[in-house]
Length: 93
Image (cartoon, rainbow, N blue to C red; front, side):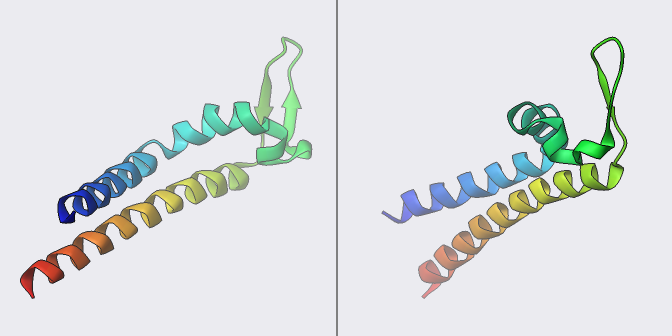
């Protein structure tokens, strides 16, 4: 049973690292498609172009979303590391 817990811990660490590494891709275009650009940066910060495209003008909101997603990745990795440390302490005792 201990091997299964260690596997889960390592999977959490790997998943968290992947979330941190791809946080900008998760937000843009990932959450941009799911939630909509206006929900991410604010309706007043979206300028629509005549060709159908748009420009978002709120870099603070963009940084906030990317940092939030990366923070979730760090938290998931930290939980995995804590589980690994706990499993190693149990083996040593």
